[in-house]
Length: 184
Image (cartoon, rainbow, N blue to C red):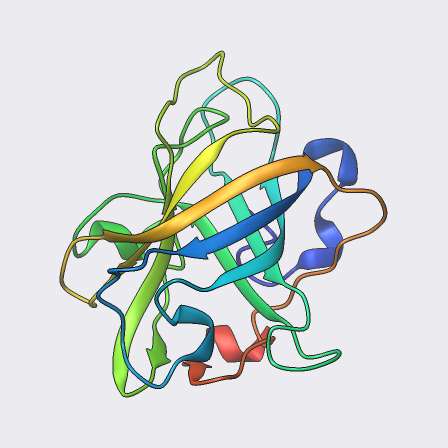
């Protein structure tokens, strides 16, 4: 949970699985205008970290990094936590099994001129399910009081080699985090 509230140094690599991934925005995605990474049909290399990877029901995180999404050294990061769908549940951290059914940014972003939440929905969940290479997740978006809808897929390709650092302040290209996320 420390990752979601910005204490990224508190995340232990042994508590998480990290993957190289690809984010693909659907050709017919209904997305806010003026956001380069959300352009329908676009694909982006990604790094995804999920944790904690241990048995039991507790708050979970899923972090998504799009390296160099806004130019060399300018990443786009999404810090997501296990949550529910629809207001107010997508603004709350909810305990979940190791693979939660839904992860939400909890806080708002401006995508173009629209306030939105970003998220990831999984197709399977449960106490014995773990993330693995080959898993295809749904990349979702919601208005502040709406329900999440799919705009693309996040395909976990293989285990990521090396460190991965995430920050809620890594943003650009028409996506602007609103307080408090932009302070992390």
